[in-house]
Length: 190
Image 1 (cartoon, rainbow, N blue to C red):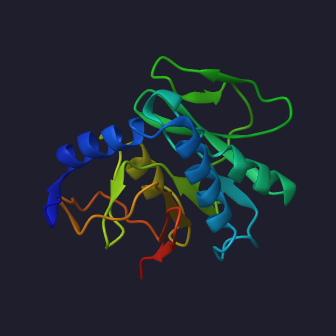
Image 2: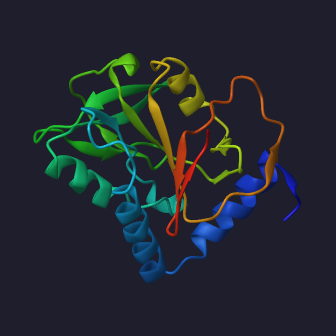
């Protein structure tokens, strides 16, 4: 791939690559990513924001990470789309998850958590580069949300694939990752 790729091209290419994964491969790679997450230096915190996967977009199955967090008695917060922003809801035993009109699983209602309370944010992405910049679906939900988190929040991307060299068109509003976990490695972005 071109050393410097546009966001639109990366979105199309990496969504296609994800959708081409067979079910068994998707499951194994998601499992490998979850296991790799155990090596991250993040497990002493309390509040973890975790996205629930959009199946139609073949997103990483985060249920294993959710199980690990719950097994360690962590507070898990999941996003809910509200207009052009995200709300952040504490996941409890009574939380009902519904699929919204975009195919995103999200809590019906619950206890709101403010972004500044979060310690770790697992961030969805389609692609990322060797500098920690990420490409999402282009709606800016996560950049807007991360801009409201405390400066020391740890941002962890999850990807089936290795990084591209460089993403073209990075803007000052684009928030970089601290780490990205793929099935083979954890990349730390200084």
